[in-house]
Length: 486
Image 1 (cartoon, one colour):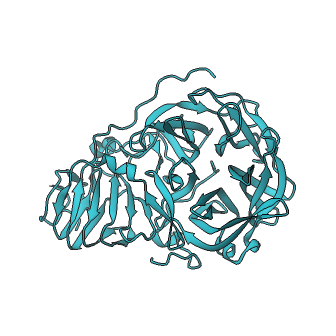
Image 2 (cartoon, helix red, strand yellow; image 1 turned 135 degrees about the vertical axis):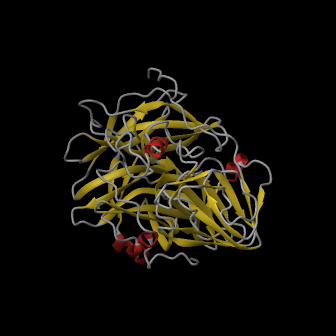
Image 3 (cartoon, one colour; image 1 turned 60 degrees about the vertical axis):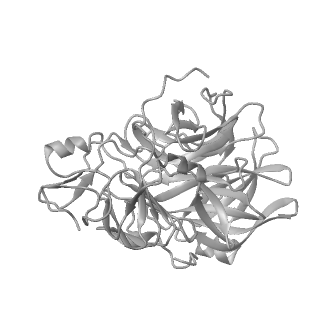
């Protein structure tokens, strides 16, 4: 959900909570240029690294920002919203400020893909309605099935008191035109704030779960019935930390944001993003069963897993799209910036190279899977279509990751960063690099990690080698065509 403030990117250890089960858990000389192979061994991919004079900090391939991660051409992005496979395309909406790379006046951006590898940007789907129930922002929400027309449901904010309603809009068949908002639910008594509806089907009926903070400061999930999709029926507080011992571990938090409830195989998984008084924490997944109790669904969690071990992952959506496992994308966090802010604190020339007019992107498409009963995120295989050829061998040594590409570890390796803890990489691990974003998919099936850091990472290959593959050419996003009327 769009928030008043987001915390700075946490240090590597700040996102860990010991109660959550994971079950596994040389800078070039200033003033010269260096190729990617900083150790002088292996295959250099030809990426020029500019080393800022007097800083020892390398800035390579950082001119245009991320290239193959989904983001708008300019402006702010945070949570993915309304994810759906509609017709023969996957659609993602997202929290978006088209006016600048900072959080304000949140609208819904829109992109779609024919293959989950490349994305087409569309016009902004809709934005705040002056004097309407979403006048201060169209916050996070979901696809709403069951209506005669395509529809989405989201949290609308109308006043500075920030009490939210649930708004519904219907769309054209191509999802490019959208109606005005209709309020279908309001914040119930005893609830300080609620947000981020997620619609789920169970036993032939539709329900919605929403994240909340209760009047006593406890996080919660609320339950609504959707027998009438235009008038949601509040069924009460569904889950709190007191509901089950494993949910006591989903702390610290004052709001369980962006709840996602989906079946995975024979089990159900509840995904929670932990918000604690303005600080964005880890994303966790409770694995359990959805049972009937007095005519209503009841979630019985058995374990809680950390979904991402990095410092930059938040607010994922998990939806069914016809594949064996739910489709997932999340927000790769980035602080807002004033237009023209610079990444390289050095010369005027470098400052100009690193000026940015955008902030935030989404992760690569993933799949929510169960491995030995644990909730894990796996790279969607379709993404590998971006890889060009078999890759170049990287011998033992240090390799600066300064251009878009994928490293595939064949033996033992680790990632090192001047400001973050090392990340061990077992054989078979994939490391996807895109400007300041790194996504790590461990070869042993353990916890994925997502990182965003201004300085490049170094891949230290200990033994067995690794390969580096360039990706299909991808220009930075460009502005979409003009919107069509609803």
